[in-house]
Amino acid sequence: MRPKLFAAALLSVAALGCASPQVIPTSTHQQRVQAEAALRSAENSQAPNVPEAARHLEFARQQIADGERLIQEGEQEAAELRFRQAAADADLAAALARAVPLKNEARRASEQAESIRNGQ
Image (cartoon, rainbow, N blue to C red; front, side, top):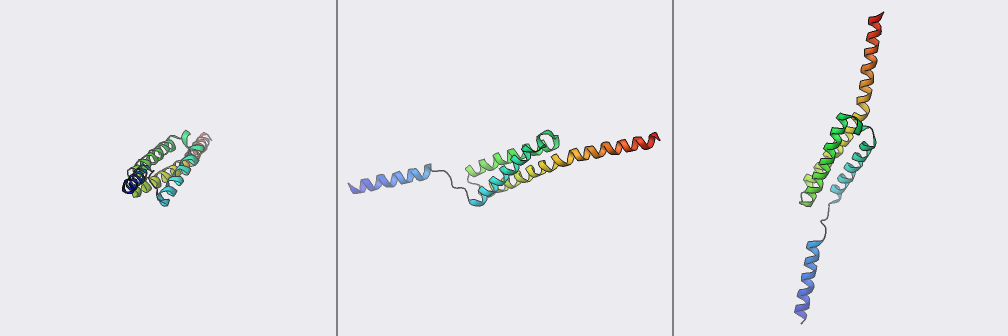
């Protein structure tokens, strides 16, 4: 009777082991958290309203989704790379959200200055 009980217990433990969620290494988890934080920060800036920045926000979202898929497939290194790429794209989106309006304003000021010079 004991061998059957032992076999049943072993089978239960094996089944639970297969059903448990996959463990994500700390470095991959940190990269994921950083990417998601960078994305949220960029989304809360003017990035969604600046076309060039919005494109990079979409890249970041896609890379986070790819990273999550890679984690499920057991590809931790590739997932970590995707999360780093996502964070970089989100940071770029935030930077573009700040820079593009300033660039446009500088261009308008330059055009105004040029029209004033030509008018005098």
